[in-house]
Image 1 (tube, rainbow, N blue to C red):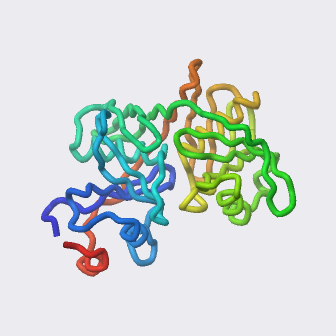
Image 2 (cartoon, helix red, strand yellow):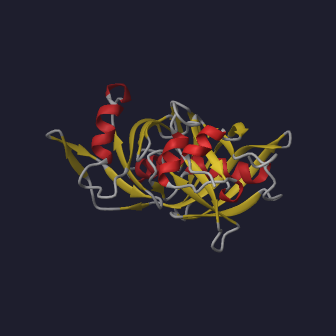
Length: 277
């Protein structure tokens, strides 16, 4: 064991849960195999992914983001909020505004605290970049799509009625479609009004997800580009709501809650399986 220093902190953003690990404070290597075991909801701690403390590379801090299947993600909006709360609440910084380096680019986090702990985080997620793909064929039918990147890939499917969408059937087919050789995050979006969109999400490497920050940004970027919404939109997901705004310069900001679930140490049995040194 590592004395009084916890091996991990587990938090969630609207039900999208991540485990944060500082590799300097655990007695094992965080390999893809280790990620899969720790994220397993039956044999491990269980989560939608792992956030790993990393070098900042010019930013104030750095984070590596792993999906539960062991693959590495470029960027995560909920992950950024969770990681920002972790850094502030666990003594890595005393600042309420700082930058994070991710594989998908640098983001800025602004923290709001209640009773001494971080409760809300706003993240500047960068600009959306669209490609020319307008439709894909799935099961013999042509589906209109918007393919967009925020440093990580997204495929937005705008539909008239979310209730008629089988996310578990259609999501993985789009995620692994030949149009996306590195796979993609998938969002099904129903425009409720100029200021609200309802979304269901199938996340690359994680599957069905209650909420996603980068997915919410991608949906609003796609809907605004098609003139279906304004610049300030509430995205409603099964896990809750995020506020997304697009600036005049195209920069996208995301604001939403974050809550810590627990801190803990991994047992000797699990550490043995992880090849603890």
